[in-house]
Length: 116
Image (tube, rainbow, N blue to C red; front, side, top):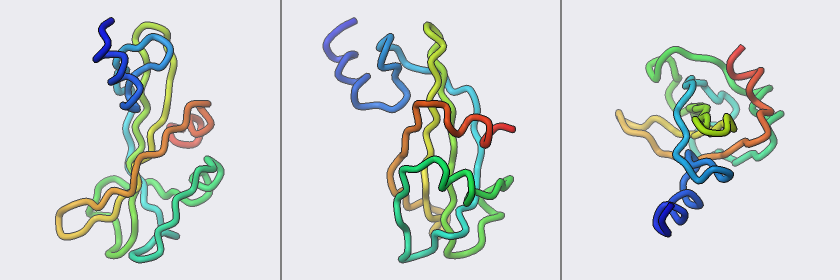
């Protein structure tokens, strides 16, 4: 693996830190985040917060105005099988999305909750 690939692996959430390979998207879901509204967004790093606060929704059209949503993507390394979950909180604004920054959970703490 070249120097560029190793640098890229450190900067991207969907690269396996063990194998230094790009991970495959395994699953994807969308949630509403009702306690986070316009002007009141607070980042949480505790997976327990998301287990209590996320509501499953089918599409962005189901998000009430002014409420944040959260995309969840699980990645899996095709070589070693390692999995991570990336949560991407965002506010839908006029057919666009204002992203707050991705949160990466590596210990599979959210697996049972997000994909039951």
